[in-house]
Image 1 (cartoon, rainbow, N blue to C red):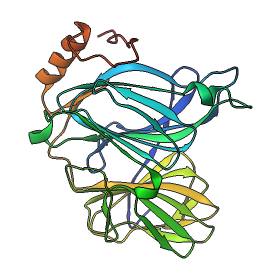
Image 2: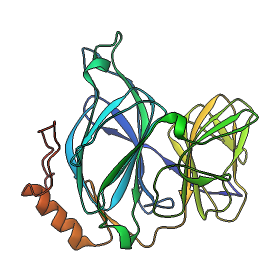
Image 3: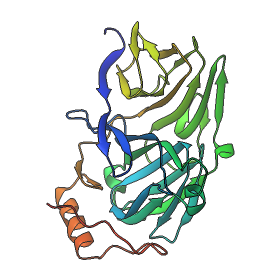
Length: 292
């Protein structure tokens, strides 16, 4: 492992009750890649007997969440009054800022599908810059056809957020970043944007090669700065390409709270415990504060 590869991260299994995820970020001393501070690979999984994902209302501060699906669908509800179905290829971008509460559930119609409801996707958190951590919460939904596509021989890229290859996604970002979903045919290669200091590729499906080394599902390859970086598919492959400018300092992460201030995290704990966060219309359950 030489040349452009700086580090390898392996997704760690996490059981979320009924389905598992691979958690890649944060990972020990590797807290972030650009502004990306959390990265979960959900599934692929199929639920039987009418089951599905039921993430009850829970709070966030100091970040933006990004949901991107390959299979299945979620109904997103939040304390702003949003009720938005997300399907594969769409983007849900939720800015928590000073505080928001949301839930994600498999809709009833999907639970009745023959063979069971499916789920496969990526959920990430993007840490907000220090001076914007307390902005007003907001939510955006961008259907798949509104996202820029970039094509090259054997390669299709969908720009989820930020800017890359001369294109800008409609998502409202707050720091220099890029986030792409890539599909590659066997033998095809994709080069990562060179203008960002921190860059990574995550293998969602298939096998790829970087500097002569094979990488499979669940591995994130981090690249050195200021050096051309590319990934070649050995099989049909799906990747997430991500990165951006380095975050403006470390963050405290506790449960669903992210902040540059430990005192702010403590205040958010108390606010949730004492039910001072806004409720989610249409979803009156809640996840209690974890044992401290």
